[in-house]
Image (tube, rainbow, N blue to C red; front, side):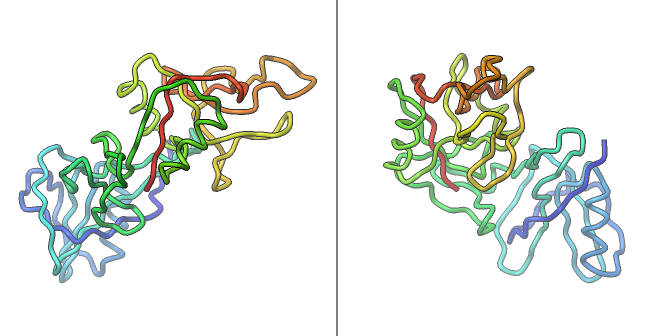
Length: 240
């Protein structure tokens, strides 16, 4: 599998222990150090200062502390050619210790969740709100807007894997819809939806007109197309 890392998060933190340190080498500049980290599959964080490049693997025992004078670089995401989808690397949930705070990928800092939203440790870069009550696609989307959030957008495998663990046996609408037969399902930002179950989407195998115009995440964490007037008793909203 070919893996290419496109960017890094810049974080104003330092790692206090060396349990996850994999290598300490000389590098002519910061970009050379980051390149070495990008080529090393086990490298999660890189630190560069005065020609010294330190690479760290992922670990559950990070001891991090904030610092105004030091920065570390964390791999932000990777793109796999086999799946052609974005898979976010683990953003250490210990960076933002409280469930009311999340790690903002936009601001590279801990930010408070909106009222009635919480962060789950499995996905530390988003805040979620969920509710019961049977709702159609339109009702679910409208409900999330009243909470100043958006309907569930599980773009990554990390988010899809989190769903069946947190909501076993459940199904819920996600924020994607099509208006004509043969159209590709996309997210609101225009990117393609990946993560469909076997033989999905299938429009109920009906070739003449559109029946299943919306998407749900199934209890196994994969997407199925569904008619938007069906109701489900779980609505998930999110914000970043």
